[in-house]
Image 1 (cartoon, rainbow, N blue to C red):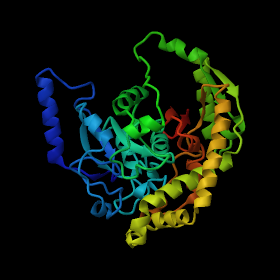
Image 2: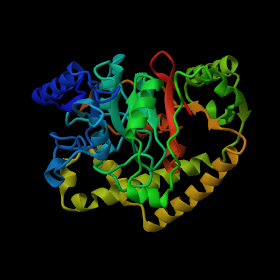
Image 3: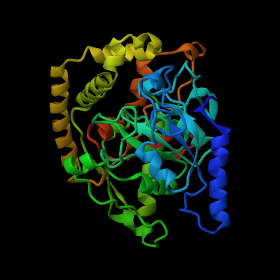
Length: 400
């Protein structure tokens, strides 16, 4: 269970001692003071390096200060236990990593956690910490949250500050929380939220709005909510148990709280997948190109090299075409949101896949990756918020 890449006991004790003294004085900083959190290895957190689970990235990108997301939580008094394992450079959704070992699913150690935020999800799912910060550019928070039976929130693009994240210049990736409950997700999101100045100018995000969890009115809020469901897409999964379990949960939600299910149609889903691949692939290769050309590719896993070779083949014309598709697909979704408030799907098209013994030395399985990513594209390509919540057992989730 190689969930942590970096851990320093002395630093952890120092943080815990400071928190204990604040409580002894009766002056904890916040409700999060003294709570254990983990940080994905592509987010800066002193005194650790940020390798993005490579063997070399700290040599070309030294860490000088905390990422903004880490700094905000540190000001709340949280205790960071270390840097969590991940799929190398975030370029995969199983969590496979031969550099530091592949993180195992705490509920079934012969299965993947999902990725790329594999370590954060496993740490929260196993109960070793209450929450973690991950990054999500292609389901990398929601997929492992789904497979590990926890809550994964992908925030609206621009809502959280990406300064101090290894890949912070793209148009699809956000820093987001992984927690054991929706309530914890609200707390962690509230502490993390806040756009960087450039995003405030270009995106003009609205004021943060979170529910009052102790209000007696909460049970009535959902009565007016309309849930969109594209039935053909919802059930287009290889394992009917996934879609049937999610549908049962959706029906229970509606019968309990009074919300309504509305049938919708979302055109060009395959085009959306392609536009996302070209967008995230082009942006990832742009970040890595200088190091790739300088010969660092030989230090990457074969899985990462295969992905970057594919991304290298995309042209500027491909990227522009993807942005045109992005605009059109946004129109389709905005039309759907005239009828409904949220869109519900399963989070993944399959439950946690088993880890082949040979895969511990590295693996590229695009069939499995496609099934795991089947429902996640809209959140990243269109910048929409999305959340994965457990509905049954530990490996089936709904996404909204």
